[in-house]
Image (tube, rainbow, N blue to C red; front, side):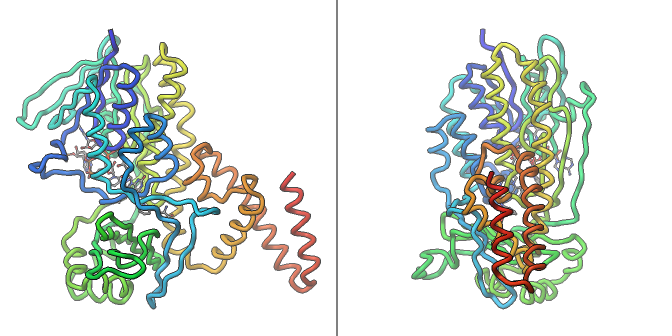
Amino acid sequence: MAESVNVIGAGLVGCLAAIALAKRDFEVTLFDYRQDPRLETTKDRNLRSINLAISARGITSLEFVDEQISQRVLKNMIPMRGRMIHDLAGNQESQDYGLFGECINSIDRSVLNNNLLDEVDRFSNIHVKFGHKLSRVDFSREKQTCVFTTDAKEQKSYDADFVVGCDGAYSTTRSQMQREVRMDYSQEYIDCCYIELYIPPAETQDATFGSFVMSPNHLHIWPRHNFMLIALANGDGSFTSTFFGPWSLVESLDSRTKIEEFLKCNFSDALDVMGHKNAVDAFERNPRGALMCVECKPYHVDQGRAIILGDAAHSMVPFYGQGMNCGFEDVKVLMRLLDAHPQDRAAVFAEYSLNRHEDLVSIIKLAKDNYKEMSHGVTSRLYLIRKKLDTLLGKWLKDKWLPLYTMVSFKADIPYHKAILTEQRQKRILAYIQAVILATLPIGGLGLYKIIRKTLKNYRK
Ligand SMILES: Cc1cc2nc3c(=O)[nH]c(=O)nc-3n(C[C@H](O)[C@H](O)[C@H](O)COP(=O)(O)OP(=O)(O)OC[C@H]3O[C@@H](n4cnc5c(N)ncnc54)[C@H](O)[C@@H]3O)c2cc1C
Ligand SMILES: NC(=O)C1=CN([C@@H]2O[C@H](COP(=O)(O)OP(=O)(O)OC[C@H]3O[C@@H](n4cnc5c(N)ncnc54)[C@H](OP(=O)(O)O)[C@@H]3O)[C@@H](O)[C@H]2O)C=CC1
Ligand SMILES: Nc1ccccc1C(=O)C[C@H](N)C(=O)O
């Protein structure tokens, strides 16, 4: 008889995990405490970030699970080939993400989630139960008993051979596992609040951008050092814009006048396309989100009884646009292990915990660091020179020199921790080249050229 699994959370990662397990003939029950988000009557939808950036790791993981499903669920992505930096005067400057035109992609979170749920419905061995909030898990050798509170406030129990927790940053699966396992765990809030704003479609068709008021193929950034605004395009011509800034700053903007003054002073071109009144209304009324990182280890309960994936295992700040991508990659990594050892789930889960940790802490760190880069780095002359040099070397040396952004966003075959190691080595070389340039400026161009050539020749070997 097929083994049974309870997947907790029908968000992005839970749906993908359910499909991947169903394809391996497990009998899957997928639970979510919310109602079906596809129903008109559902009010409590997942409201975190309207759109998301999906890149190589997310896409290749979807393809790994099922190529056709991947094509269907990723139908309406909008490619973004670079950052568009908006300065205080409203000038825009494009900075490409990839060496050869590679793009990350803007995708609507709820469309993606709903599409994945439609795919889940195609499987006769996945049973979906909405309105079921996990409250307890009793682990035993034979069966894992998951206890839920339903919308009707009833307690219901469902047994399964094992549990896969994909219930997000505040995971109940994780906290229940902590009763069973000596799990290291940390949660850290960063001093940054986010507020979602909205840029409507153009009133009349723009000659260059059609129904968009600015380029849809860029991730727009208004970097203002210790705070910033960003915007990602939606399929209907609108943009979802997000403000990020310290809590004390947001709390100090305690009147409409102060908010309007602040927005006018720092983001005047954005304010024009949002509409002054709408922007102030949104800033004043929309929820203020907190941002945090969660790290833990191990990710499983022994004897193959439970495992956590996605934000439940590694919540990260959104600045690299990797949270969901990494969660999808979790599914791929776990399935590869299961395919290699289908009869030994205990060993698979243990190996997953052991090998995945290094990559997960790496991307959590990279995500934190990227706030500085987006809000400040992109405006610094030194950063721009280094980026130019990095790009030049990347284009010249091909896959012998890979900028960090390329490794993280476009090279799914390079584990996050290896991307950091490679970047550290390249950074040392870049610093050396920079020092050489500065030191040899007085000597003249020829000497400089020879030294750089020699350095790169050695590196190429
Ligand atoms: C502002 C912002 C912007 C972001 N942008 C990006 C981006 O551009 N690219 C990217 O890759 N990532 C991004 N992320 C991160 C991304 O949103 C998460 O990594 C992703 O949603 C994680 O998916 P998940 O399925 O693990 O968790 P979730 O999407 O949180 O899904 C968890 C599900 O579990 C359910 N659930 C929770 N508790 C229970 C319970 N007790 N019982 C039953 N069900 C439960 C919830 O209802 C939910 O449906 C962003 C995050 C934020 C906050
Ligand atoms: N990395 C980050 O900084 C952030 C990541 N996210 C991601 O987006 C997902 C969706 O977010 P959202 O829709 O708000 O939440 P979720 O749907 O994930 O909330 C699910 C559960 O978390 C509980 N919960 C919510 N806030 C807290 C809290 N502060 N402390 C303890 N438990 C809490 C809720 O409990 P109850 O119903 O009992 O209140 C609910 O059961 C998150 O799960 C997370 O994965 C979201 C925000 C920030
Ligand atoms: N999706 C996001 C949501 C919030 C903040 C940033 C992003 C990004 O994707 C940033 C992008 N990776 C960048 O480095 O420019």
